Image 1 (spheres, rainbow, N blue to C red):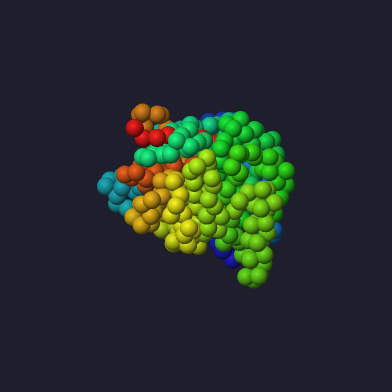
Image 2: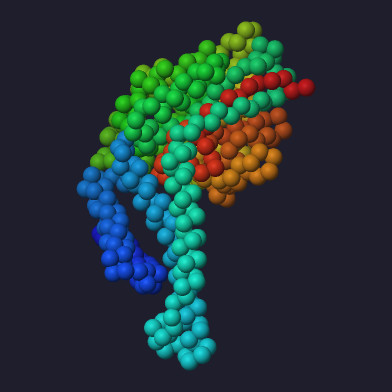
Length: 409
């Protein structure tokens, strides 16, 4: 029923926009006008067919299928049309107001002509996000960027000077169709010759089976001290309508086994102590912890922290960066570095080093990408390796983080 209601509203909006856009093609030949109408409604009806397809499969989105890119194109197309809709509403308000001021409000819309200027301006404004998002989809989806960051630590032991940590996050394997992009990413990771590799959650979009076709790629990640991982909000299957709790639990158990079969050390509110020369590095991993109700919280840092008192350096993996200010900096001041992901930098923003760093996700997350500091504690938020929803990136490229520990002078 909700789908039917959505489609009715969608068709009404589409008709509203179509009726206005016809004004712009009035001077064209009958064939051009007919072609415009056919293409317009083919796209609209194609989208409705796509929704019914998902509904019949019992899914909200497609996984591991080329249809991901079709879904993304629909998203770009209709998101861009929001700008046209905005200008149409402004124009209709203008028409109503103009008529009311001149002759009264009666039958205002039919007697006042639509502004071709505002309509053209709406189309121009719509073309900006359309071509920008299209470029981001074609050129940036798998344009992996290696970001090198040195982190100065007070009292860092000599054994850990120059210790190299590679962090990846948010693979979202359900959004991958082919292995080649992940093969390139793994080759880039291994080329850094890391001492330690961290994966900070969201291996899948919804279900464990999404990653199974890529295990023979991800198990090639190499590191002197191994690969450590935690779960993200998408890994728990909370966004799936499971028939029962047993099915949900079975899916999560399956995903945990996948981490282990990849050779990754999955930390579930636990830690691992690594001997680096005569020094001890504690890798602490919590399950998902968020200050927002829309995201699940399973993390128990007090449990994960136990037994790390003798460590010379404490490294925390926590998927959601909101955890840092909510608990880490106030209650666990001996944790030197926290590594998070989750935000993806919203896959959209502007970053010009030394000039500007902005994304809409900043409205929700104070720490959303890169390095942050509070006294002697640091947080690094990885921009994500994969994508979800929009199959592309604009201004915020998929990231492989290389974090090098240095002694603070």
